[in-house]
Length: 451
Image (cartoon, rainbow, N blue to C red; front, side):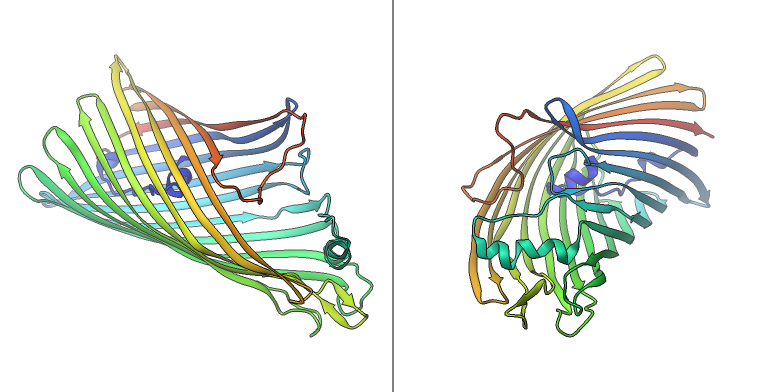
């Protein structure tokens, strides 16, 4: 969860180190995440939770003057979602299965290090979404030719199947520049492809539209991270890193139309982000301080269409569409944090905090077309949001001979505020009702054996 948030805020995680694998070991871990809970009048109406298991190993060995480290991680995570008791138009309860396999091979000779890594992951889920209510408008024509036609078009139940496959690799290099400094460079690349299928029943009175329907949404994308680092071999400045990152995602909606009257595609789009982060890490005895700055630019080009939802004057097909773009999309993030370690006999404790602030500044432009473009309306709204996240974390490690037991705890505390006057709101609240948001916790227990 924390890694996702930091990547989202412009500080992507780049694992290009050999320090964690200097000893021969095998470890197993199990964790639980209370990601998010929504309460209405003290009753939980929405839950999002995670449970995961992990096995890791590190195997260092030598061939002549060359040191090798083989390492691997196998992780299986389950995400649980339930909003059946929430005040919402779409309700569901489902589980997401996520399996990941990472391998690394690190080679070093003298002061030179070369690392190679691979990554593979799969995500699968099959949620059924119940449509509790459909939108309504104060305009009778909008209801007649749009909102009132949604229920016979899509029904009250959407059966979904989503499968995602992710592959990636990483390369990193490091060498001593002189007796005081070391330089390094790393590349992480990952791409993914996903297939999302939505099945529903059209119950409209038109033979050309009614019956069992299916929408296919193929998605694909990639993420690139370049890291350049300068490390000090003396006390003081530990590492100064420059990270350049790029993400891009695209989708296409295949309507699988039952007749030529309907639309063959219901839209397509692209979302991309590119940014730069500068991170400074200072270590003084048992204290470690971090600080960082990140800026990113966003681009969005998307189109969405409804299938033909009915007919006007018996033979004129009715459909609606929208095109959305970002004429301005940027974010600026700042980060500062610390960690402190101390030892008590067989127990080592490390605790710290990280504060991150990100300002998102978007300008959303586009056009909505009703009745196949007969009625059009421009879209021009700002979206400006200030997001603050406080990360409190602690780790307790107990050693007894070759055995080690670690308990790790993390609490994320997000707060945010809209800074624009846009009429668009993602959520609405009922006056007089008490709402509360909880979650952001992670717990993990790790058992390790050192050979």
